Image 1 (cartoon, one colour):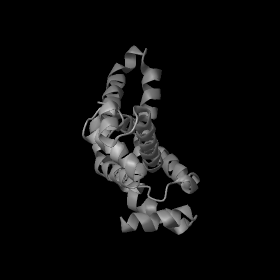
Image 2 (cartoon, one colour):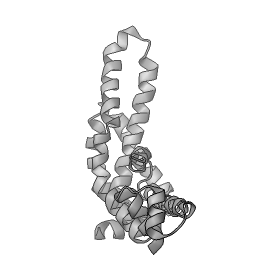
Image 3 (cartoon, helix red, strand yellow):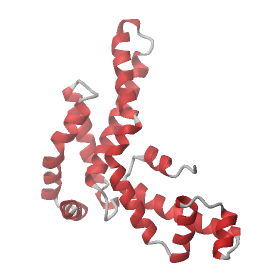
Image 4 (tube, helix red, strand yellow):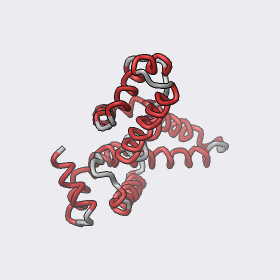
Length: 200
């Protein structure tokens, strides 16, 4: 965590040496990851160039606790999915390219597999815990009773002696707070965020 904080601080301040250090630390990992789905090495290099350009251009918008690892893998993954989607559309009706079309389909499915979200699961859960801890006491109690103990709004109101409307207000506030934290820190990984917030 210390390395991430130091690098992020330098990146956000516009330190080009820190930016180059980030590229040195992550480039080969991201290259191998993308290369597993896109066989064209030159294209992978172009994708990674776009990924790092985005990191630099959006550096000032990153949250103070952004996970560089999660950010870079998420953006790389999404760029690969976008490329494969475009390629499949181009090859869809070409009978002479059906093998390539099928291969692209397999790569698309693999990249879209929710299992990949496990790369970020621990960090996401930790951030949710931190966000919940930072909620006002009553809001935190309402949210905990709702999401972790499974009580209905009416039951929460009875336990805490507040109205259902107040319960709804607290839950809405908690969800908005947590969602904002996750969307800033794990930019681009919206499928995972949506899954976490789906009401069971």
